[in-house]
Amino acid sequence: MISIISTYGQDNLTTVSQPMSKWLRLCAIALTGVAIVSSALHFWPFDSSKVWQMLCLPNSAVLAWILILTVYFILKRGQWTGTSLLPHLSVFAYLAVNVLSVAFTADLGRAISFIGKLTLMLIGGYMLFSSAISSIKSLCIVYGLATTAILISVAYCLLARFGFGTNNFGFFDNPYKYGTYTGTLVPLCTSYLFMSSRFSKRLLAAILLIGTLISSGSLGAVIAITIGIAAFAVVIKRWFLRICIISCLLCGIGLIFLLDSNLAVVPLRDDIKLTEEDGINLKQRYIEWQAELNLLEERTITGTAAGCINDYRSNFYYRLPKLNTLKAFDQNGWLAVSAETGILGLVCFCWIIVYYSKLAYSQITTANRIASVKVNRIAVANFIGFIAACAANLISSVHYNGILIVFVLILVLISRTNRIFGQK
Image (cartoon, rainbow, N blue to C red; front, side, top):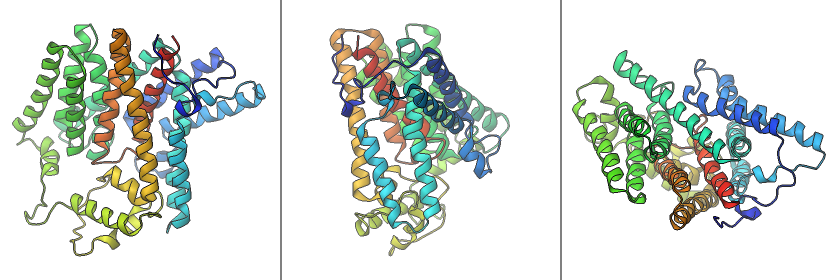
């Protein structure tokens, strides 16, 4: 038996008033499948539609679940509260700071839209995934769904870039969003597959890892995958497996350099450079980082308001050159949080990170203590995915619409793993 603390502040594990009905659980699994698999399609097929960006399949699945839960709650008339499905207190604190930041916004519509999308996933998406995961079997189903989604995304990206010679990154059309998506899911799924006893799954993990590195077009993807796989090699104890995963990582990175003359890898080659094309000025990305630090120094408490960093950032370049060469979605997520919501927002976001990372790591140590292969496999995969997400947040934010869903999924996998194995 795994003994893990379970209070309201620790994911509300003991506040269930009545078990969820079987049909509702099946509905949650179905909607979870739609949300996770369709996340690989991003905003396809209506990429330019603002309405579709809000009502795309993952968001619609979450909205549908919120409606279903609301009706179910009303019909039960207090017999079922659903508090066990809610995220940790740190998530609510972070959302509260985002809401309060609206008082300092220069664009109310943009701030409200950003907070709406943030709340939809951090609360609605969290509750959907929590509802779907109630057993070891459902945990495995969710890992299968995540693997299916990342395979679709990477396969289409490889086909589009190397087969048809286009500049598309899967269905994302942007190297930074694609890099954050794959940089988070690939370490999660490959670590889970590598720890399987089946050769076919390990082979699939190796192909997925190498293929993703070749298809990546941003430094963020390479950093996230490298850090995630390196952490995986440290955590696991089997030397044969360590050698295999490190070999696959080096193979993927090596192929990037071998394909250096291929147009498909030009975006990555350019993204790794520290300077602009003129060879004189520092890359605009790093100048932007300094501007955000300047902004935080000036607006330490208020920030710019959630989602409104672009309304103020230009005023904080000072003597640094503004070259207007920054590409869309090339943003340090950590600095963006602090610049938009001030130091308090950064503290609350770090609270989320610290809480879930400690929870994930404690599951690994517990699994090692009781020598449970099954628990260890799941716990390690969750921990590696979480580390990779934090690393991916350096180059492109996990807060973006269409990307936040995978970050929330990892939070839920960690908390539900704790719940499932903690009660046995």
